[in-house]
Length: 124
Image (cartoon, rainbow, N blue to C red):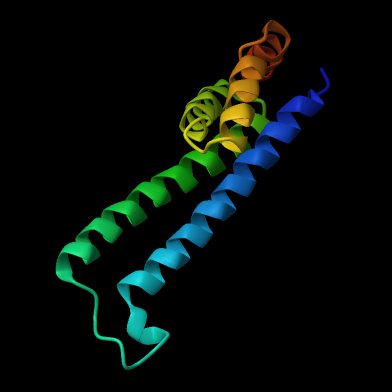
C-alpha cells in the first residue's frame, strides 16, 4: 500500500516545528547567558534562570515528540500517528497558523483511510 502524501506533509510540519523549537531554545540560551552577547551585561537572575530552564526542558520534550512522531508517521507506525495527534493538539496553542494546521492534522490523522494505512503498515 502506497503511503498517503498527507502523512508526508504532516511529518514535514512536525520537523519544521521541531526546528522552530530549537530556535526557541537558542533564544533562551541568550537570555540565560547574556554575557555571551555583551560582556558588560551581568548574569541573569536566579529565578529567571530556573524559569527559562523549565521552558527549555518543555521545548526539548516538544522537539522529541515532534521528531519521534514524524519518523513514526514516515514509517507508518501507529505510535507515530498517536504522537502526531498529541503534537497537533499542542500545536493548537500557536495561534493562528498552528491552530489551523493543528485542527487539519487532527482531522486528517483520524480519517479512516489514514488510520487503515497505519494499521496495515504496523502489522507488517
